[in-house]
Image (cartoon, rainbow, N blue to C red; front, side):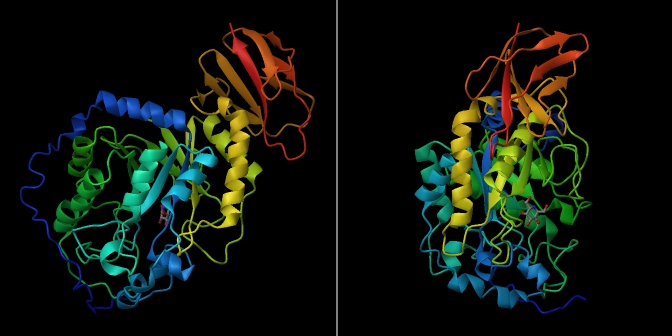
Length: 441
Ligand code: FHN
């Protein structure tokens, strides 16, 4: 059911395709990460916890970021939304401060989602917040400046899938009922439009943490010119990490493997690969309630304890957690999100030692809990264990001493070739994690 009405007259390409990428080598098959890129990967792993933000003109409708597709809205109707998107309560300082209060070390925000609407000042098209909204300002610039001021990294989510630009053609799996036209120039879309916008994001916002790609799954067999795009990013900012949410095994030029609503190697969500690389940092993203973009009917908020457990399980699986909130259309972050995040931040001020800067520990994660490790220290996170003694598989190194993280109380450890056994304190009310610190000889 393709409707042939064309309503894209407003897409204006102002950058010529020829010449702008002439200095970019497409030799990504031989991609060797620059030393500063490798350092950025390590820092990323150390950071462990990030804030994901889905925010766009769709937020007005309070029905998630897929509302255009799900409600089969016509593009000319959807194009009315920017006319009343005026987030007068948006406060970059408060957003960054909240992320920091939550113990998050980076923010990943939608620079544009599948509706293609740029939440930044783009010269590639007027389908952007500065040109089309009464707000007329660039929130990503304010956020980038504030992130730099407060010392937190900023990543840009960028949807390769675009439901608005006619050159995103042939269409993929989504948005067939929105009056999109039946012709377009795919190469122009990728080489001129998308790469042009990426160049803006990597040029006009100071040092950024990286680009978080989404949407390739819409056309898994298409030629996305990845080598060219990845080379552009690495040339413009070698420290910027490429994080592709294509749900496949990592490809040359990518810097992080990410998993959606699942821990690495799991596929309960139904779209992740179970292949897990041991060459790249890992990240798992999830939602604080059930939605990415603001959904007025969604009150399935996870408790602070559930979020803490998600973070601990991610760390024990050698992964970061990127936790999403969908701000209101007026720019506010609702209290239901903020209060929970602050509680997690307080918890991290006590337990952060066992999370930040660690890697997955020596013992396989299980329902009982996980381990993390930093140098000679192993943190045993007991998450789901009711018995007074815990027996773990053998460690290759001797335990020199053991104590409870929270109060330093000494723990008696019995170690043999059969394993490591120690008592675990009874959990206190609302306690998500009991951490035993093992110092190895
Ligand atoms: O379709 C998107 C969805 O809206 C959201 O952005 C998530 C975040 O991981 N990713 C997509 C689907 O893979």
